[in-house]
Amino acid sequence: MHRGKGLKFVGDSRVLAPSERKKMIPKDYSEYPGKTEAFWPNFLLKEWMIGAVFLVGFLCLTVAHPAPLERIADPTDTGYIPLPDWYFLFLYQLLKYSYASGPYTVIGAMIMPGLAFGGLLLAPFLDNGPERRPMKRPVATTAMLLALAATVYLTWESVATHDWAQAERQGKIVAKVDIDKSSAGYKIASANTCITCHGDNLSGGAGAPALVGTGLSPEEVAKIAKEGKGGKMPAGIFKGTDEELKTLSEFISGLGK
Image (cartoon, rainbow, N blue to C red; front, side, top):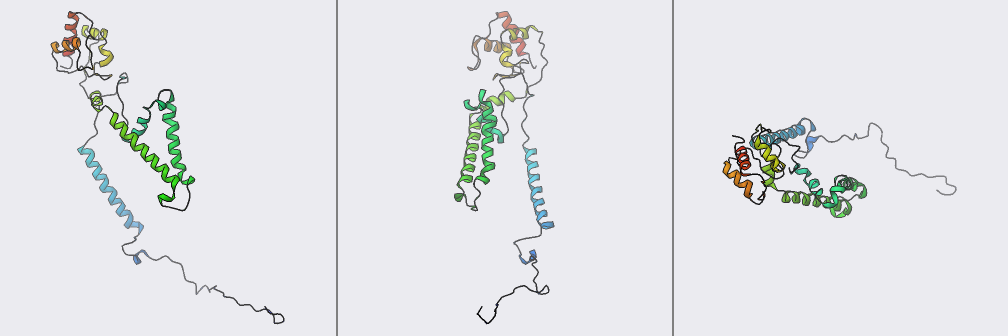
């Protein structure tokens, strides 16, 4: 602007007429060969084929290696050692520690897992920076590494300390036998606390094996009752007479035959 010479305006108008405007249409996927494809049906067809192959392979594994079965659950067997599925083993191991079991079960079952999973859920909000590299996101990276390390360690500890041999004996399927609980042999077994360890139906319990279908002779049963076996059954458990011992050994030897 100059005094006395009016107003001089210089501008650059980039507004184009509708006929001159270039339409912003995304390029067709065919212009990027090998890099992209149509969602329908190309992409979905590939995903379906991958899922079908995985499902067929999984079904073949289940047929070739069926899930192991155990005996029918006995709620009266307090000695049975349970074991959850593998993805719950870390929580199962956590409940074995003194500060997370017994009177503190609520802490181990609810509070500690709740804090852990809650921390993972809040990690994106606690560290919401634009960086995507793990080293630039210390809060989220630390939370994830701690959760992963704790899960792996507790799972490994649960598997390493579990008595697999005893669990196999306890879960072994045995023949179902109708036991005459009014017989003299069963009464003698009950009086000498045999059912306390071997179960009400003598099918095993509290770490003791089943007495059904043992294949032992009456003499072998009498020897075990008097002298014990393998340190797991101490000697001197049987307190009855020789006649009662004979009746008991014949009764146990005949179970399952």
